Every structure is written in C-alpha cells, then in structure tokens.
Figure 1: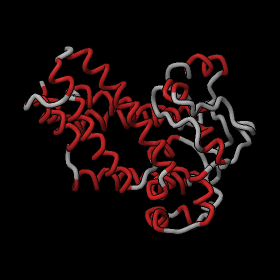
Figure 2: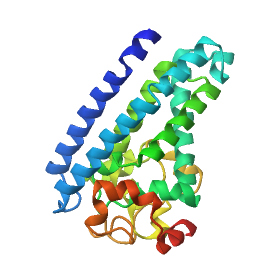
Figure 3: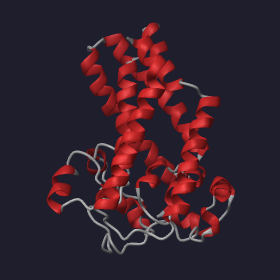
Figure 4: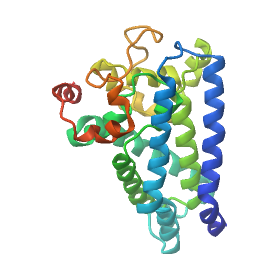
Length: 276
C-alpha cells in the first residue's frame, strides 16, 4: 500500500488541487464577498506562475522528500508513532493535528523573525484576496517549509497516508479560506469553530499590523484561540478593508520577476510590520 501511495502521491495531490481550485473559483464568481478586482488577470497569471515554479523547484531539489521521509521512518522504526504504534487510524488523525499545529507556529515565527518575514511577505503583498492568494509563496519559503515538514514527519513518525491526507487538507483549506466567498454569517459562525473560514483568515491579510499578525491558522481554527492570536473581525468592513502591504502596491511590483526579487528588497515599513 505504501509503495502504491508513494508512486501515485503527486497525481493524487494534483487531482485534489485542481478540483478544489476550480470549485473555489466557481464559488468566487457566484458568491463574491468583495467586488471583483480589475487586476485579476495580472494577479492570477503571476500567482499561478508562482505555483508552477514552486512545483518545478520542489521536483528538482526535493522530489518526494516528505513522503520519502515518512516511508524511511516507518521502515526503520523511527519516530514517536512508529515506536508506540497507536494504530494506523489514530496515527493518521494525530499526525494531521500535530502537523497543523506545527504549520501554525511556523507561520507565526515567519511573521516575527525579520529574515523569514522577508520571504513570507510575498504572500501578504497581494493587493487583493482570492483563491490564488492561497497558493502565492516564494520558492525559498516553500523549500524551507518542506524541509521542516520532512523533519517533523521523521520525529513524529507520521505514516505515509497521514502525510498525503495532511497535504491534501492543507492545500484545500488554504485555497478555501483565501477564497473571495460570501458565506452566510451563521454558517461562518459555526464553521470557524472548527476550520478557518475566508472571513476569519481575511483579517490576517489586512494592511493594519494589529490585524495582519492575527489568525495564523490555515486549517484548524483552534490554534489561534488556544495561543491567543485570534481576532474575530477586522476594524473596517470585509468589503472595504485594504488588503496587502503598504510598501508593495504598484502594478510593477506585482510582476513575477519583482515578486521573486521581493525578499531581497529593503523597505523601512517592513521593520514596522514585523515589530507590531
């Protein structure tokens, strides 16, 4: 079973990615939360080109590293779950929870440590908020994230199926909660008790520093409440709030080349964003 999953992991993940991407895009057109922005063609082109570039970088530098780490840990009986053997179902469930909490803290650290913020601010410099924002990351941040996940997979002893489930859920939730989707308030109220909703995460993309450094979760919403980083609503209305970073708002800065150069660009306002 593990061998089959390893051989077909990329196809499985790609299939789920495409399906969720198209579903969220459709929901954005039918039930938009904010007005459709005029720059969507430019933004979508460059954001999706980043996705393709990141996939290529991972395929060249770290082909199947996270899955291979899980397989190696299981084969050599390494890691907490491989030692205590809680069973495949419990191992998978606990693995998803632990990895999700780790991603929450990674995200929080990337906001606070200046050198990491330089990488992560690419995600925040999108001047609008939709499904493509959820997949907009710098290749160096993606590589670092995969290295960290691979280490955690070995330490925890995450089973192969647990890695695949987590990656599918993480990608699907990231696209959903970055969606420009107008959920009914009652549905949003109950749904965000379990998972991160678009309105909950949109607060995190505000230009205001006291909102940007809140709501770090991508998947499960409890971590922000447990660790004191939860903010219910933005100061402005969701339809009116300003998205992005004050220092990166021109069309020129949204080009693919300038997005890739962004971590190496110094800006005084960046220091303020990290400290607040």
